Length: 343
Image 1: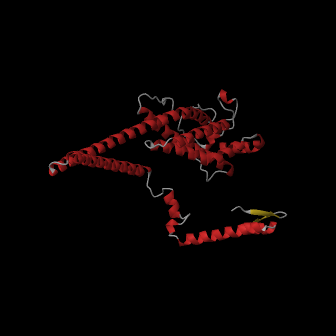
Image 2 (image 1 turned 180 degrees about the vertical axis):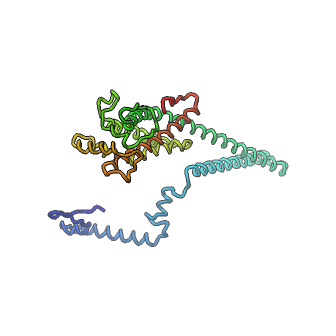
Image 3 (image 1 turned 135 degrees about the vertical axis):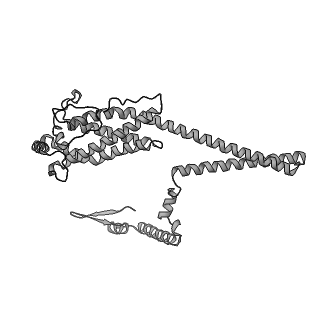
């Protein structure tokens, strides 16, 4: 039922249907309709109370059964379906044999030696059942191999879109975590760095394509693009045969999700309206000792430490992702995976 509101000067008061109609002046027809609805609702409530608990509408058990919560996993459901089809095929074989026996009896009015005939019938039925079971096993193996191949092809196809995003992300990430005066290893996946090593992240990017935009801004841009590509990959592929790859993808997405607000706050320090705040943060980062912790850091550096933790988690996830994708691509000789550029 929809609720209705009666406006006062500064607040709203929730009104039920009956109060609303009495407030606006309901007609006799409206009153009769409302009484009929109330009576029907009361009758339905009494009917539900007399039903067994698992048959009541909206109960937990009925809802769970309707959603298939007790039907087991997907593999168990597939097994039940295969067993059901096997029994159905066996029943069809038996029906066909009985039909042939009936036709032979009607045409020749004899079944021959009953013992020999039953023995031959049992042998033939057993041979058909064994053949049917073997055929089901062969079909199941073929289906599993085909599913594995399709999953590998889907992973390689998505990786063609994820790979450029990884390259762009690594180049910007390594510029953020590398202070001025050191060489930037653009394709280094995992790195060891402290918060004070990130003190130059508000300076202009070293890449010409970034057109002088700050390092942290470009990092956030390509980090979001890579996260989006990873999300599409996780949504489109089941990862039935590559759970380690699924784990790496989800860990990268989780790290990006948890660190998003901190990265946004760090980026806000470098905005034009927060110049003094940016200078304060940079000064604190320069004074931060090696191996510092967020617990002992100044309040202005809390978000910096969260971003550092996010980058470390993303690095570990990307390392495992690249290893898993290389393994998938190596299983298919026709597929090539570029990994020699990563450190």
